Image (cartoon, rainbow over all chains, first blue to last red; front, side, top):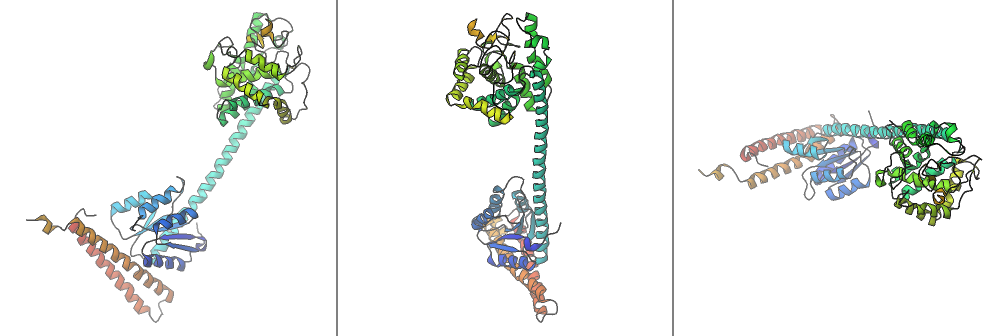
Length: 399
Length: 80
């Protein structure tokens, strides 16, 4: 690689004024664009902090901060991967001094008294290397960004396919996919309200819509059945948790592993009386506990064929009644805070806007079975005698 | 036999090193400036011979500094 020396700026640090001046003259004669001379090491360090130099020519033996101190300061100001183009000029021929200098960041040496041609030749090599380093670095940065973009694209494509699969699974009761989307957004809000870190919260938001993906494996005859379900049919419906987890399993993507946990555990209850594994309390993954609350709230506050939507106040009251039983108390407290702050009121509008669907109560048929859990809780009777398509949202109270 | 009469103290060796260092620093601008001037003026310059002598003289002085350094090393052993 060649470069035009007039584009190159060099910082010369030597406490001996005559030596520093000789170096400046050598570089100027060789056509270097800008040569800044510093005889005071402290101000040289400040100069370096101020701007990018293509190279530094540095004396080792100086009073106050010596060359080693200067190198430490220069290296400290840079990223670990940055190349520090330091050429040391020294009269010291001792091997251990050279080794120390190399360890401190020196890239090459010139012996005092030096030949001008040698200084210029070594400096040219140093600037070449420095510029190649910079090029490589920006090339690497660009590649990293591209890889990240592609990975994100790939992941989005996977998620989109799964979302469409989930939509197919729920087509019978959530044709617009709005319920799934709202559960996603609300789960994200709850996660953030619970101070889950940003990355995990957005992962929960993206994967929560897949919670019922396993319904795709439940036959129409059972999913859409009117009237009472047999115990066997209840078991099959409960199987949507296993089926969903199975569809999502085996991925090396964190996000799909999260989706898998949600699909498997969003019907578990805090008191251990949910399904399918009857996990208790914190043994239920946080994502599952969050989606459980979000799913319940959204089901209660949207119309179902067998009932009108209940108000947000009523839904919150109902969820609070099941605090510590169906729901994690911390998450119930979190949704109460969101409710008080008016965040929940905006939710439906936000989701409809994002989805590009006019606001309404959804197509007839939405929610015949939907998200109603089979089990104890406000949305499920807990027995085969009071299955999903039961008479109303507050079934648990009616029992 | 007193060892200190054979080997100078570390302080003396250190002082010697400092002088060597200063000599090299002093020679550096002489050699560099003379060579620069020579290359600027070219071989046909009226003072080409004079400059040549400055360069040669500085190089000779530098060799002598090197010899002093070798002696200092011999005196100091593992001196700084």
